[in-house]
Image 1 (cartoon, rainbow, N blue to C red):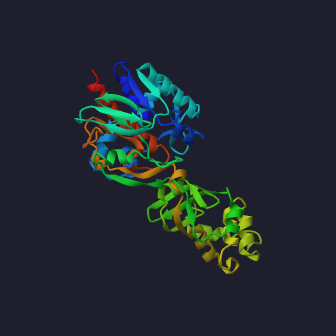
Image 2: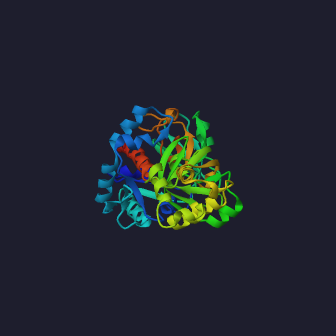
Image 3: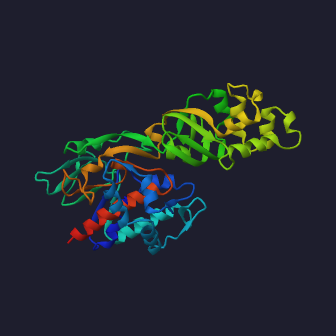
Length: 383
């Protein structure tokens, strides 16, 4: 549980850490399988503009002020984990291995008294006076009573079974918003099976995706159902969308490119695109399978189509395939230290709360900041 990180400032006494599965940090291992991204280089204001939540704006600004990117990177450096800033303005661990990161974190926490207990599924919380809490795991095992409990129970993303913990908190009066998938691919309404089959796992490099949520530039990947990738994670939303295949060129510049060069006017549009942009395999396939008669378009209309390719995003992929989730316990249910207002002594943080952010360092940084705040409060309370 990364949210116990800052307990390293506390005195070395025994802190039990219960985890539902056998391995520690499974989601970190999955997310870091292709290079472990630990943060990004955005300003606080820009960072916060990407975090969606149902809490007060100033409340979040105060949170991020307490432990932001520089603090986090310095903390990691103190543990011997070096980082570097990539060309995408994301910070990565220098060895690029999430497994080494987890090993270092776990060994550090053990030094400061954290005892990791695995395969412990929380099935109930009992309290007679709302001052101490007994936790029931696997329906039979009792731990406690505890004066303070920090719950970091996740949001259902990448889970093979439905999460059951929301009912435990609803029992105590906490408002729960049902989970929905976030940072996930979308089905594309217009695409035929023949097109998807032809383009499966082919990239659309450096494009601009525009939806009702805004614009995001990056790479998309054609899948068996539609599209996924960073732009989709940032602005994916059901409804109309468009792709600009050439965001580096203005409409006029692209029109001139299509006009120019050696015998281009004698080529059909599909041949012209293939000759001019040989690496744009997906674009060529989209034009070939289009319902429009592409070869009848003049250069101006063709250029417009390449800058404004329309499509419709249908449903997102299921929560079990999502990188993260929307929904959870309302942010209004926790105070400035993330203590649950209706369950004194119980802290909630991480994906189980109703906030969401795109990939690229936002998720881990927000969890770490919340964990720091919880840990700082507990460190002051521990005798």
